[in-house]
Structure formats: structure tokens, C-alpha cells
Length: 403
Image (cartoon, rainbow, N blue to C red; front, side):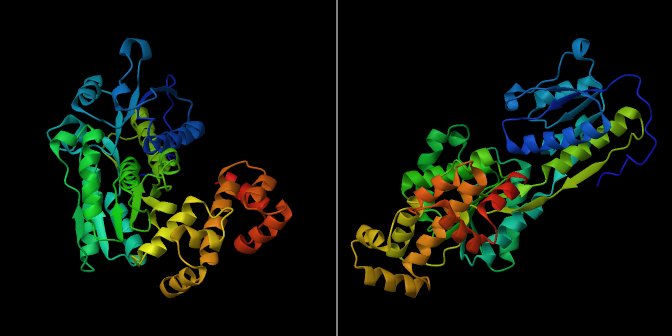
């Protein structure tokens, strides 16, 4: 862990630091790091910050004669960027360096750095699926098979092995490494062959989205046949998939803050030795892709999928029975036997979750939400909501807006 430097007397600076930040703002992981950096700068700055929005290919150091950089905070995607950082001879802190930059012979191996506790992430994923009583497990690695993704998989596999469970691993092919159009034709039959219901872990949310897209094309019901869990809690990814992707949130803001603190210490000459900071996963953000399913009855699965697709709104038990071409009595008996509750209770559960999301994540007027539910007034809906969640819709929306 990084030692605290704020309590020491801060050596005065002759000019404002100018820090180059090489982070792919296209991804939530890097955006979280940036938020942490900015928290430190607001408290202990000011700093001049050189930031380039975009992905890995957009990142580069500013020209020395123009920016006069005094420090660097970076995720290093390749050797080309690594060489420019080494050549700059500036105080540098790295985020999650890849294996080539950790070898003792590489100059960047001597830099201060922040590491994610990837093993804890893998263990958390395994614990989550075990708690939900899954019997079958799978892992879909990212195409580059980076060290952090490998560490997450190994911890996932090792933790499950302690309970006598095995993990099916999707085999990456060289020709598919950079072309999802090729790869999705390979992954679909692999997903279909998995025993159902199965729990699928992916090392990041982008890979999780690809798995969900493949399931949608293959008509594999999620979460009723496959449950999918990603990492990073990138809301732009997780909340635009079908169904929304459950994900492990990571405390990247603490890493960004710690990295800025270490760089400040280096630039001020408070210390010169290498330091490390380990940041941790926070929690699992549960969405529709990773609910537990401990049965494989096709009729009940089809009913639950029909209810989910309609968000529980404006459908009745008779609509479900009609969809399955069964009598209401037959489907009710099937639900009671397999799930232990009625079709109406299943509709109510999905409906309330849909309402909760509309209240928490949108500015939709409560009257309009009530109309979607087929209710006469927001007052009636408010009574139902308070009974379900223990607070009014207004209180819940205000609470979630502050999260």
C-alpha cells in the first residue's frame, strides 16, 4: 500500500506541476481513475493536466518543448508508449502495468504503480455464483488475454475448485483476436453446448456485452439458461445490454487518488523509492443478467422470458397462459411446483424491478410510470412502492441521485 505523504511538510514547488495523464477515457475503469486523480488535484493542486480523450490509440505524451511536463500518470498499452515514457526521464506512476513492463530488465519496472487485486475479483465472482447455487461454470477470456484478465480467471477457477467445481473456458483463436464478426460465429455454438443453467464470468464488461449479444443472436435465454457477470460496472455498457449486465464494481477512484498522491511525492522530492498501491473490488452491482436459476423447465423458462420482455407491465396471468398455449391452471401448477410461487407473483416481481429502475435511473414523472403500469394514479403506485421498498418514490429517487 502507498504510504501517506500528506501528513509531511510539503516541499514548496517553484512552478505549478504539469502532469500528462495517459488513460483511455472511453472506458469506465480509466474514467474512475481520472475521478480519483481529480479529487486529489482539487485538494492539493493546482496542477496543469494534459488529457487526451479516447482509446488506447489516441494516447501519447505532449511535446516536451510545448507542455514542459513534470510528471506522468499512465496505463501503458504497448512498447511504443513505454519507450516515450522512458525517454522522458520524468517522475511516473503506472496503473496495472502489463507483464512485459514488470520484468526487472524493463526500465518501467522501477516506477511506482497501482495494482488491482484481480484475485479478489475472481474469488468474488465465484462466491457470488456459488451462493446462487449454480452447478455449471464458464469463463470467456478477453481476446488479448492480458495478465489482469488471466489473474481474474485463475482466482475464479481456483476458488471453485475448492468446492469440486470445474470451469469451461472458451478457447481463443488467433484469427478471431481482432474481429468480433468472425469470433461470434465460434462462440455461439460453444455457448449452446454449455450445460444449462450455467454461470458465465467475463474479465470485463465489454466481453460481457459480447457474450450477451451472442446469446441474443443464438436465442439463449439470459439469465434463465446462462447468467453473465462482468467487471468494472461501466454503466454505458451494462445498462445498454439485453438484459442489463451485472458487474463487479472496482474502487478505481481510490487508485487514482493514491497514484496522484505518489506522483506528488515524487515531484516534490519527498521520496524517491518505488511504492505500490493495491485497490480492491467494491461490490457486485446486480442487474438482470446474473439472477440465479436452479431449474431447466422449458415452459417456465419461456414464461419468465415473456414476463421479462414485457417488463411486467400491462400483462396478466392469462396473457402468459395464452403465450404458452396452456390453461391458466396448468401454468399456475407448473409455477407452484418449480418456483414455489404464482405467475402473478413473478409478474409483480419483474414489474416492481422495472418501476424501481424508472424511479432511480430516469426523470420519468411518477404519473407516467403509473400509466405504464396500468394504474389510475401516481398516488396508488406510491402506496405500492412504499410497501415494497420502504420509502416513497421521491425519497428513493433523491437517494439514488446522490449515489
